[in-house]
Image 1 (cartoon, rainbow, N blue to C red):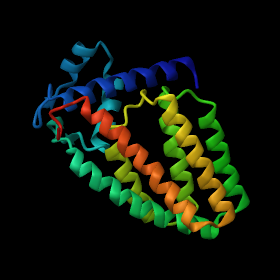
Image 2 (cartoon, rainbow, N blue to C red; image 1 turned 90 degrees about the vertical axis):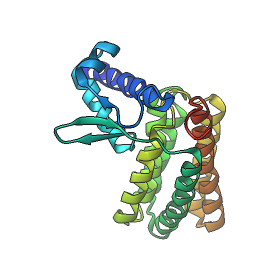
Image 3 (tube, rainbow, N blue to C red; image 1 turned 180 degrees about the vertical axis):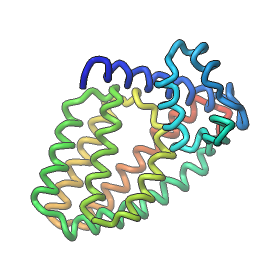
Length: 223
């Protein structure tokens, strides 16, 4: 990617985090209209990155883009609701992983190994690390060819993304993710259903703990 594209992505991510924090901290209450000109002034970021950020926040359910009205803040989920979202994730993602195990080819497994290796070589505090983690799960479930179930998981992950702070993974989190992904790959090779289900469950629950820590930074939200 060109330098201008990289800068544009950074600006978009900065706008995303700033608006997200405004919503989670209660600075922008449910029902508040997010006006582009006001956000531009407040953040010192151009209209393009702010539009990108609002589209992402719409996908994660924190903002609703309403025709002729613009972006409006919605009510963030409580931690209790997040726990239910994660339980749903576990159920659906284990089904997809089992189906993937049934049909996985050597090239499918090689692709997962490539993503796992890219994660190992990235810094845990880069947004790239989070995206690679999501890419690993997407690639694993894509092997199943169960596209409608995958769409459900994608939707659940969109809700979760806003709470997984895109920059704040600790080294210990990174090491654990890498270890778990390695066990998931080995389980696919060995056709070990128990190891696959258990490791995937643990991997998803680590994510819930990260969400809990992130939500604790915003006490109004279910705490």
